Structures are given as C-alpha cells and as structure tokens.
Image (cartoon, rainbow, N blue to C red):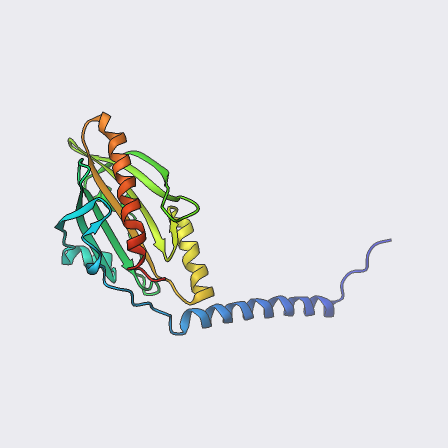
Length: 225
C-alpha cells in the first residue's frame, strides 16, 4: 500500500517553516553585521619592547605611505632584532587590523613576496612550542629566493590567543567571531631571517623558532585579548 501523498496544505506549511527559518537566520546575521562592532583599542605596537629574551632591536623599520595605502592596517610594526647568541638578524613584521568589515584584510605574504621578485623554494608548515602553552602553534614556513639571496619566512594569523596558519581557517574564525562576539580583529605576524649556505638552513630555522618563542607572549599584550 503506497504512502498517502502530502496534502498541498502540509506542503505549504513545511515551505513556510523553512522560509521562516531562513529569514530568521538572515535577520540575525544582518543585525550582527550591521550593529556597531566592538572595535578594540590595544596598546600601540610602537611600544613593543626593544628587548625580548636574548633578542635586541638594532633597527626600526618604516612602512612607507604607498605600502600602507595598500595594506590598510590599523597599526604596524617592522623591526630588526639580533640575538646575543649570534647568527643572522631577524625581521619582525606585524600588521594589526581592528576590523575587517570595511574590506581591510591581511595580505598574505605568499602573494606579496612574489610580487616583489621573490620565488618559493619551500612551502610547508612547522610547529613551534611556546612556553606556557599546552600545544605548539602551527605556522607557515617558506624559503624564498631572489637572485643569490635566500630567506626563511615564518608567518601566521593571530586573533587573541589563537594562532592560525591556514588562511581559509583564519577567515572562518573571523566569521564565527563576528557572529559570536561581534568582533573581526586579527593580525598578521611574519618573521624573516636571511639564509646563507645550505648548511645554515637548520641553524636559521632554530633561530627563527627561538625568536618566535621570545616575542610571542609579549606580543599578545599588544593585541586585543
């Protein structure tokens, strides 16, 4: 015996319920994204310490007006640090965005550096243990080359206490934060260390990880909690 076909009335009721649910969801998202965002006001990155662990600032960098016009970050930091343990110096670059709703979003180094003439030799991810954190953070690792120059690059996206390597996951977390907390702030963190001979790659990697461990906790004090 065949099941009775649904009546036009029950079909209409089901359709109305689905449409109502969709409208409620759309209304909720609309209210979330149109009401005033909670835009944090953290400490200026310019106040970041000159000394972190064994690393000491030896040069303050400058983000020129042309770059800033493209970057559209609310605050930036670019500095060169050297370690008392020796080795090549490291460049720390941070671009902080208090809100991404106006279209100002972090520019991925994997897109920016090739535009400056660098090519990728290595593209993978590594984990860096951080003192005081139960789990290491995962970061992107690139080895890049331009002419005879090579550099090691580590970068990730930092939103409060959350370090994210994946750009797709970073965007997903931004959407979730917008709905849940009415916030879309984030920061791009990048470390660059020049590379010498092939034998120096491991040494540079260890130095980069040591630098990250040194500045990670202090940096969180300059980003929204």
